[in-house]
Image 1 (cartoon, rainbow, N blue to C red):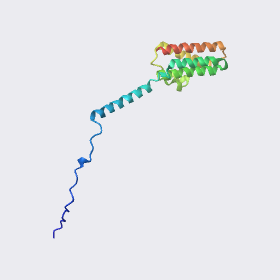
Image 2: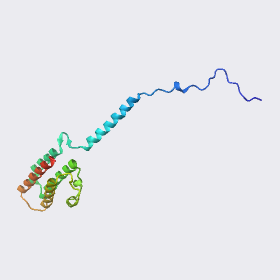
Image 3: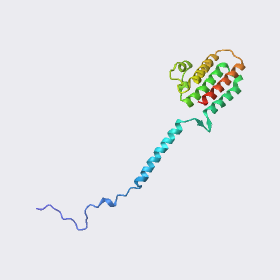
Image 4: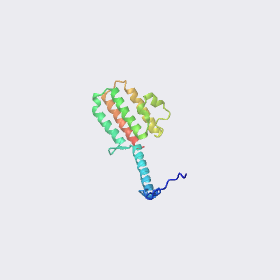
Amino acid sequence: MNSELPIPSGLQDITNADSYLQEAAAPQWATGLAIAAGVIIVIAIIWALRSPQKKYGKSQGQLANEALTSLKERCAELSNKELATELSLILRRFLDVTYQDPSIYQTHEEFILREDALLNIDNDKRSHLLDFLTHLNAFKYKQQSTAAQDELIKQANELLTQLSKN
């Protein structure tokens, strides 16, 4: 007995799949252009995030000077400890943003003893800054007049001006 079944007359073999496949939606040059644009956008975003020199149109030096001006207006109502702490924070925030120095997260002693502290600032400015921060640290525990507080703010302002020029 022959087990082959006859093929009915209206049936066809498997259809060719080419008629169901679509061509690529974009030519290769357009795909390459889209990838290049994506890479450029990513680089631009990284560059913008890594250079926070200006915030709302103001440089970090200007923001620090505004903070000093505000502090000077409140100077009379602050104790020496509060004034020295706020001055130190203003300077350390400036160093953190401008020079990527982590001093804001360290005690005075840790900062002074850290060998790589402020290596990207020239020696004169660095030694002046370290001396000023040491003076601020000692100032917290002294009895001083308002004139001494004003002088500290003036020195901090001069120091920020010097550091902004670097």
